[in-house]
Image (cartoon, rainbow, N blue to C red; front, side, top):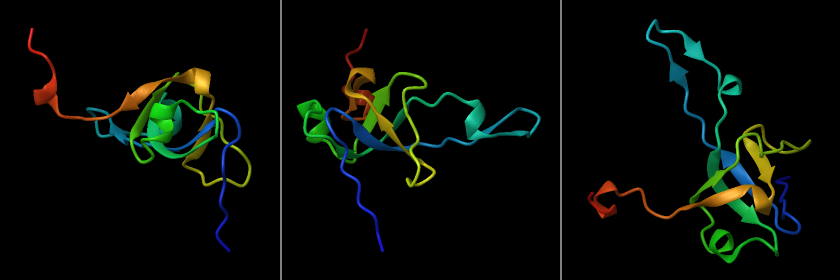
Length: 100
């Protein structure tokens, strides 16, 4: 049976973005040693910022160590409080950035 989870309040459910890192010597650095502070928005609570609720599936940027894992969730999923969110990445197009 598939479990569904709806965050309460301003919490946001995210899927962590994992970027496996390899040192110059070829050593694989596990994700737990890095401080990833972004993830994909899976669900948002009723009091979450409208820009977060309107962009389910977009990349969320949040404070380092703000994501909390909960029992019963997938290993790559976590909850982030609304006040720990910096913003949503709406477009990754470099050409749309202003030139200096």
